[in-house]
Amino acid sequence: MLLENVERIEVVRGPGATLWGANAVNGIINVITRKAQDTQGGLMQTGGGSEERAFGNVRYGGKWGEWGHYRVYAKYSDRDAYSDSTGAVAGDEWTDLRGGFRLDWDAAQGDVLTLQGEIYDVNADERVDFYTLEPPYVSIANGGIDFSGGHLLGRWQRKLSSRSDLALQLYYDRTQRAEGLVQVIKPLEERRHTIDVDGQHRFRLGRRHDIVWGLGYRLSRDDISAGFLLQLTPPARSLQLFSAFVQDEIALVQERLRLTVGTKVEHNDFTGWEVQPSVRFLAKPRPGHALWAALARAIREPARVDTDARIQNIVISPDDPRNFLARLLLVEIRGNPELKAEELLAWEAGYRAALHPRLALDLAAFYNQYDRLRTGEPGLPVFEEDAEIPHVVLPVILDNKLGGEAYGSETVLDWRPGSQWRVWGSYTYLVLNLQKDGTSGDPLSEAAEDHAPAHQLALRTSTQLSRSWNADLGLRYVDKVTGLNVKAYLEADVRLAWQIGENLEISLVGQNLFNGDHLEYRHEGLINTRSSRVQRGAYTMLRWGF
Figure (cartoon, rainbow, N blue to C red):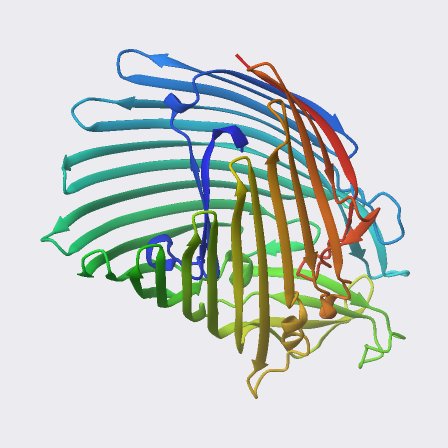
């Protein structure tokens, strides 16, 4: 997304399923773009460096008739590859080309019409551990992912009165994706069409109730051909999602105490009807201070890969110590049509305060209870004697036999020492405990509790050095991830910008400056993508507004 088109980014803690629906489990990142009338005139950006090898953006906005405004834009980026565990090139570079538009028509009668769309073409490279039934059984394979498509969104809003408004939105998306390895002739190909319709009505009832309700429908049609690792049965499928929600914000005590209750009801093709309610309290004991608490349920519904897939995951040689059969062993992950939705019940509480006109504090704590998390249950081995290379297939069938809890806290301080200087600091703490039930044979699922850092700290500062110069500095510390053998690291990013006149700016950016490279995560999943090490980088950027 073109960052200059963004008005704000909202990070919503905890489950947001009451409004956003299934899969809004641990948090929401809500990106709100600017209206076309707020992006008038021209903008050009270009630059490049060591990791961000080359990039360029162009945008132009103008007026459309008496009531309308428009903008058009295009964006290109070319990113270099990271490094692998040996220090060699990881082969994960990618390029991205996209362009789009937005039209807004804002009539005096209270009708607001929006039409926006985008098309894109992306090429991304990757390396995976490629398993075969012949020695050496595993090798490093170079792969590529080409995906392209576009979307179109139309929205109509009407202000019915000072206490009521109505909105209707229609969205269409088309995606085409091809993924393959140089060792394999036939790539995995996916074509998907999605249509989404949403309606929403907000109104005030009396002096205390602010109610919003809505209906939605989504149709997603895919066609997925067999590839080197993944097969889906059936290869083409249409999925429907029906939804309805209602939320009431109740002013128990005007300006002092508020209660918000609501629920979303959905019907999906995997698990049927799902209900996701929430209740939230907000108290303001005095100006500038707020206490809040929330209780909510959210679910993660199964995806096609969870129910319909067969994945060739790993080959284990006969002399491998892990091989309990002493025969050539192929581990095959299989979807389960009876899979249930993963469930979360979340308890949250927090305190926000303006401690001083220049200092704000935000404290939050949570306790999450998870149930029916996904596991991989070993099935009965099958000897493929008639295969070109005889081997044993060990099926691993997905199931819901894991539960657990997570708890933690977050603290944020926002300090403004001067009118041109701002400092943010944050600290997060996380503990995750997982337990499989007594019937599970999954030897790996509980280890996921060690796949996240317990401690994270961040410090950012932004200051206006002079009339023409400003600087930004970010420091972050991330604790070790013991289950993935990822060491703790401390990193820094810095930006120095020179404003040349009113519309021209040159900036220099350095990223990950403390280490030549470092590992942030180690991939462990159904597809054996090799992990990359994030590298130190720098780039320059020229920005011109006209």
